Image 1 (spheres, rainbow, N blue to C red):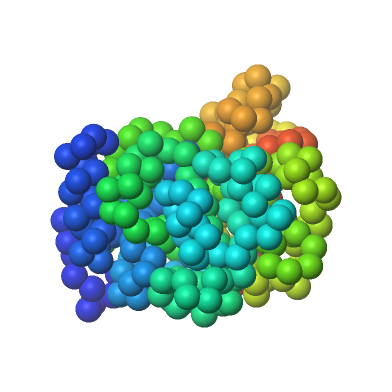
Image 2 (cartoon, rainbow, N blue to C red; image 1 turned 30 degrees about the horizontal axis):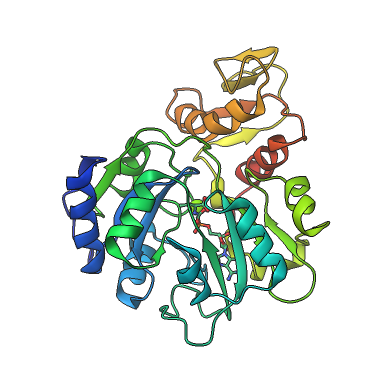
Length: 320
Ligand code: TXA
Ligand code: MG
């Protein structure tokens, strides 16, 4: 927080009509609310207001070239914001509401602040499934820009306490509806002309996407500009992280998986769904332990393991 920014009291309101009504009033007034989705907690602000979106960037301390995901309540609203071709429509029908984000050409008269798309002529759209985010979208009757509700460069939040840890004092309200079920940010597919591309691996795997629209190519490394949130440090804990660890070295706190038990385990049974749901929780926990470094057991690169390893490689990358 810079000296000019004011400290504000952050309240945590249990999910229910009162909290949603209060949240919708804050949103309409251009303020921010942290709200759970099925993936991670999002920091929501009205996507048609440059000021609201600026508050998001400020609260997160986020690099200003990073465009935000716009959350919508229904298909009709989505079509006023992005241009859907047949492939985009088929994916939306198959996976919305759910953990899929589509990057599409921006609709010409879209009522969106340019800051929301960081000046790009594309827009990232997602129709979430979580009851709290859906209730807020319905009550505010606005598309909501919502990046993950953490300060820039720290781990995505899967519990209200994680949000309070890095955004406490910066936002007025956190809606508490417990831990998120998926624990991993949405899969992002780019369909803005040409081949569909996987911009960020997530809960919906490439094969599931391919089953609807045919093979999708992976993002190539030069596309860092069009998927700027893929910055290496985006998912980083504050300590160094060693991957594929079979046992803990001196000074390491080991996160286990399967037969490697560690100080705590992502999933003793080697279940990748459980591991994804616990990933950010355990990185938070490891970050708060006395040992100065974190190590993590190998995770198979299949199914959700692909997305988990993507996050882990970024978290382990040296920061500059
Ligand atoms: O699960 C999720 O997607 C969560 C919940 C809250 O919905 N949101 C989330 O938002 O992860 P955020 O802001 O942390 O990640 C947004 C990602 C970034 O990697 C960003 O670069 C990418 O979406 N993105 C947004 N608009 C884009 C665009 N026009 N072109 C390419 N990438 C875009
Ligand atoms: Mg994030």
